[in-house]
Image 1 (cartoon, rainbow, N blue to C red):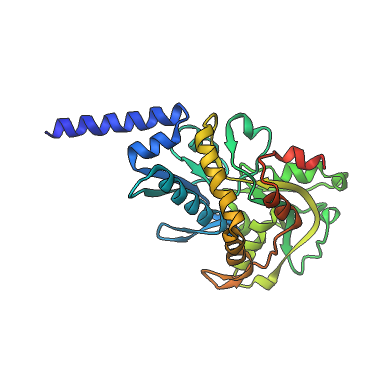
Image 2 (image 1 turned 90 degrees about the vertical axis):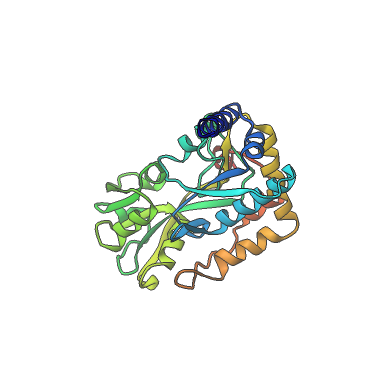
Length: 300
């Protein structure tokens, strides 16, 4: 009996893996009765952890709602939702190899990534900015000359900074954190003079600092980037299910309420407001849902 059960378990695992690789995530979810959501641990109000396996945030909760809609679509009485924390370095491999079925964190939809994965419709349009200590005297890109700038391994923020038209002749040293919390710690501890990253991530980490007033977000907008949930390529049925859920959340107003909850109201663990009103670009993305990459935004 034990051998039979083991054989069945191995078969189920192999079948689930094969379905994931063949691009039929809905069939994989229905066969296994489980789904894995990729989440972030320190991506500001978009997604972060409270510890003890508790993951929260705007994109995390939105992802949970998407998968609840998928459960209804598949007619499943029960769906085992698993959370898999991902980093900037491993998020794409974990989606492509079938470990994560849907990643809703802080991933920019760009042309390079579209070669490996697909993206749902854009749900947040990000502005890359610079965070510094309030008394640093740094107010723009030119003030970074001779300074140390932190960013997170696996992201493109420093490259974006270097490409900015106002960065000509500005020489700075780069240091890297293993995740966004680590990068912010580099700034907080004085090992870096600035932290370059998505504005929502900067604001979220500042809101969780011991003294949020000690930090500020400054300078020019370095780039505008569409943030979206990520899924495996060539899985049209699953992408449609994800997109349909997002469009439903936009249409019935629940996504706007979710945004208000995470960006405009006090959030755990410190009950401090992030205070980022919805941008015109995000409103536009919701009004006309699309999965266009960052490069299309740059041409506008």
